[in-house]
Image (cartoon, rainbow, N blue to C red; front, side, top):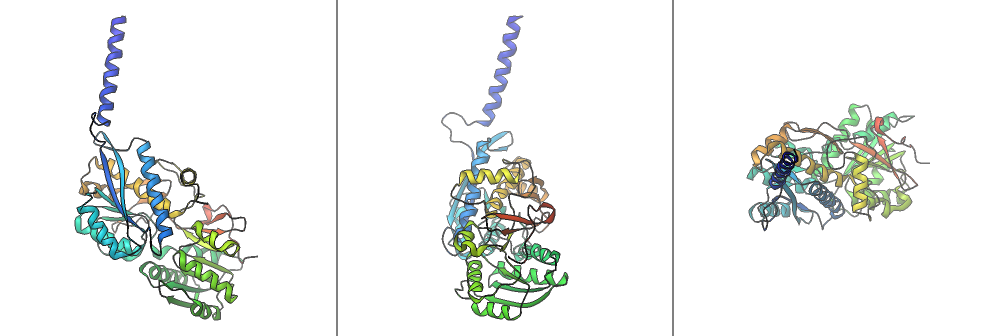
Amino acid sequence: MLHRSLLLRAATLLLAALALAQCAPLAGEPPRTIRFGATISITGPTAKEGEHARDGYLLAIEAINALGGIRVGGRSYLAELRYYDDESRPERATELYEKLIAVDRVDFLLGPYGSGPTAAAAAVAERHSIPLVEGNGSADSIFAQGYRHTFGIMTPASGYLRGMVDLALAADPPLRTLAILHADDIFSRATAEGAAAYAQRRGMRVVAQAQYPADSQDVAAQLAAAQAARPDLLLGATHLQDALLIVRQAQALGFAPRAMGFSVGPASPAFRKTLGGGADYVLGSAQWTPALAYQGDDPWGSAARFDAAFRQRFPDSASTPYTAACSAASLVAYQRAIELAGSLDPAMVRDQLQQLAIDTFFGPIRFDASGLNRSRTMAVEQLLPDGSAATVYPLEMADHAAIFPAP
């Protein structure tokens, strides 16, 4: 009896060892890896946003590897990130994505920060038939090219400011008139056009709309024209630097509409740090916030736990930027698609991405035929005097009521 028990135990240990051997490389053999390649705006006008995007990738890579990596055909692979600084320039992104494919021999592509560099990356991905999953380039035009290899997990640019329009109309009394300022770049134009069209469909009156150069250091003339139209709501289709510029110059002009909001800017910790009390009650669009009640099967499992993990990993960040969550969610989508494909073949992984239907800490991810994830709603945050950022939209997930006008 004892002999039989020992044999059974030995057989069990042998099976366990064989299972582990499937996951581990042979002695002296380097670990199996899946190489993901990206460019990031480490320098240039969107460097701060690029930093957040990179940090989200790094957090996700570390979390995936800590849990055993990505399972492919019964074996585990470690995830590896290779990235270069695209200097916030689309033409540089094109050069570097070609290098990632030809020289670094990456397996799959992740997105840069910004719609311009993302449009460039998407063209390269299509040319080489390699999937690109991205979370920080949302211009609608990227997904109107008929590309089959680019997948965007975020709400498109045309929907960035819709939540603010909904909030304005739900106020008591409602905000009925709107002015829109926007930079002359692919993302900001799409955002402004989408906001104007949506506001008009909802019955708001667009009383002023003006454009300024993407690298502008002075928008006083555009603000003065908007101020003369006396809008209830001022919206900016912006990035961080021009959002800061608009707030500063609006305050200098004494331009104080009942509400002011921006597509990009307020969600960055740098916005509050730079403006101090001048940021109070400003609205900001957010692809994701820690307050959203999303849960899923991923390394964190919920929005709140992702927030805690990010702030532990990057303690100098006062809050968790949604750009970081977008990057991390891109890798979650990739991991699931690769595991479902059971292969590193780009065509098989692309097919699984097209069919993907998962719930994550970031929200649902389900791509339509164009590669867009239209299964989720853009959030809106309002910056409060105590230094917090309250989620005020969607209304069913809000943790605070929006305050109009600022006290």
